[in-house]
Length: 225
Image 1 (cartoon, rainbow, N blue to C red):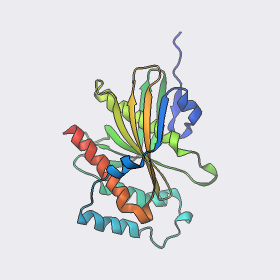
Image 2 (cartoon, rainbow, N blue to C red; image 1 turned 45 degrees about the vertical axis):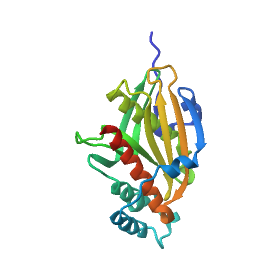
Image 3 (cartoon, helix red, strand yellow; image 1 turned 30 degrees about the vertical axis):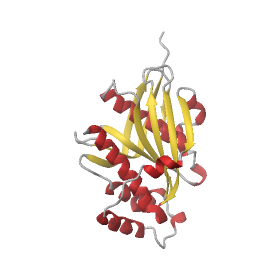
């Protein structure tokens, strides 16, 4: 009788259960990489960023709930990075079926190809981390979502290995980016190599955050051109 592959929900992922099915090579914070993963803003983009940043100025951000911060700060900045068929969507359902485990759940935010009218090729996935008593380490939830997105992209082009994927988790208006390389989609234990960014505080570093998001979108478009 075939063994039933375990199913993991993104929001319940931990270091233990993820490491039991995936080899994770965590390179930690690699600052030079993120200093080079930036594109300059146009004058119009800077003006819009100033407007978005004004939504956070002189506000008691620590008293805002996650949905309010998402609406005032996170989503508007992601929306500004849209280009061609690349769109940002919220509350996107993803599923991935690796040979020995399954992943599924709802992703807070996705930037991806929307040519067909739905997100078919996620390239940046965003986790809005909870705060307070219900908070958990958002890293492993993000890693699981990146693994699912990479699998979906690989399924469209099975010969395209390894797959590169970007992720980000936000805590209040603080952003941390992650770059991932995923390979071995049909192996017993897929390999995921990751590099993290420093933390960026949107109320003071909105332009830097946007420069990175703009780079990620441009990187995807160049690879597809």
